Length: 323
Image 1 (cartoon, one colour):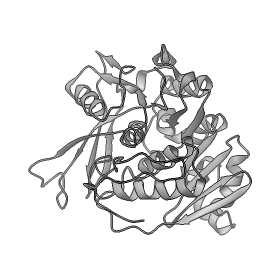
Image 2: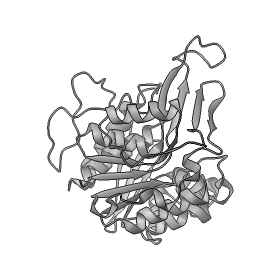
Image 3: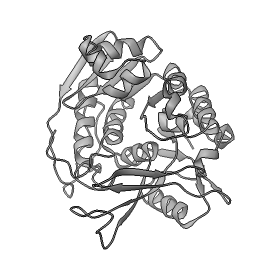
Image 4: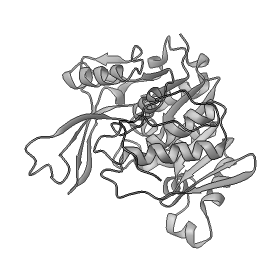
């Protein structure tokens, strides 16, 4: 079986208090799953694409729950391995303290290139790996490089930099090799400045606009660079810069919005749609996800087929949140 989209990366059990409460005071918690690559796979599966997710989970209840949840989203998990010795990672969202990760020594942090054995990577229309995979261990870093090397379709990278990981202090060293091997780079403006070795405030003072940063990134190898900012999103491709201003309602939870944008953008681009349509689709999907504490619950579902130049359509049961 061939896939339109294959993603490699860690997914964790995610715990969060109900809206308006904190971990300290909540009587119950939302139990969910979270991982940049699987979030994007869920989004694309909801838009009707054949998707697969590759990873390693602990042979524990948390891992089983994640597999059940992704399978219900029609993400193919047959390539996911279970580790009898290492646990599934976990993240805790707390409005008072921010996000805290418990992933050191997780099953995914020990996976290596062998995780790709038997996976039809070369047949996929597109593959995705993020900087998180580059930063959680030497094995995952090697697996990410192997995925990009084996791919023959669109190779997509999102730096997705995170603090406190095994390789966070060497993020530029570890993530740039991913960027050099990709065709499509999807990134935030601050993290793009960081992997290019520029101080964010200093870069802005020196006129390093998102377009300038994108042109620097293009020199590393990608053919298309998308830069997500707080008020606009821009794309550099074929020598031309396009941008879209974004206006969002107050977010319930902004975590996962970047992954949702990526899914909407990728869906249009691998379907042959225009950059303008992809930007609008991505912005719409990103805004939708911010309406929920979950990283994926607010993602729109496809209610009718779309052509290559149409953004994904929201089903009548999904809440509208224009951007």
